[in-house]
Amino acid sequence: MPATPAAPPHHALALPDGVLHYTQDGAGDGAPVLLIHGSLCDYRYWRWQVPAFAETHRVIAPSLRGCWPDAQPHPQDGYAIDRHAGDLAHLLRALDAQGGAHVIGHSRGAQVALALAIQAPQLCRSLTLADPGFRFTDEPETPVFYADAVQRLRAGDTEGAIEQFIDTVNGADTWRRMVGWFKDMVRDNVATLLSQVREANLPVDPRDAAALSCPVLLVGGAQSPAKYGTRQDRLQQLLPHARRARIALAAHGMNLANPRSFNRTILEFIADA
Image 1 (tube, rainbow, N blue to C red):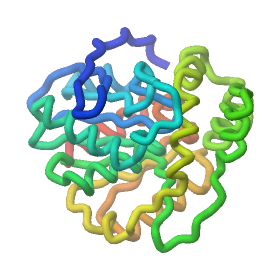
Image 2: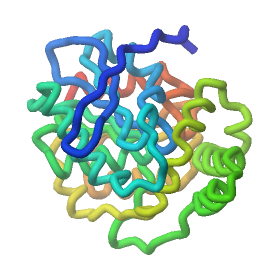
Image 3: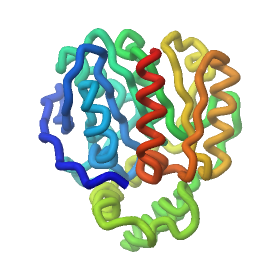
């Protein structure tokens, strides 16, 4: 594991109906890189990616609406996939990235990234989806895997809620073994589950995915739960020219478990996109 990087500068962008917090680092002549975190996270999730990508690219890492450091009480109506995508389109335009960015989304952030590419394709130079978990409109709805976590959270059992969620997406006993900074981040954002559950199982139209014209990379952790692989398999069918990569020695949190491999994989893809 590399040495802990220094925290990059914090910024806030006024939106028409709120504020979007983000960090930004690096420079470079090419298109910027936009990093979109998943559930229970914020821009701190990318601590091993921002400095590495900033060596050659301008890197933009937002905290999605409703997440730390602006975690208002939940549930919130604005905590929704399409709203997040609209916020990020506004951010890219405000930061003079109208020419498009290399968009990277992890887990729930992968669905936000896909929504951004569908809503504003001109803002997406390439698209990387890391362990997406969404279903498609032609697939049956399944039980919400974190329903028990939401019930525990409503009952005041915050630690139990977090443990159920984290261990389900990344493997048994993951939460107990996580490092302190990650646990602090998750605790700061756990209330977002109360908003997220309102659009649980929000499906993606396969026709929208198949219509993507930008280069696409599908990334999975070699030890991730099988459901994430099935999502990549379906996307590969819809996008036969998409690249596929597996991050060794890593499960769902692949960018933290094996950051060197994850970073190298993304940077090589971006260089060719």
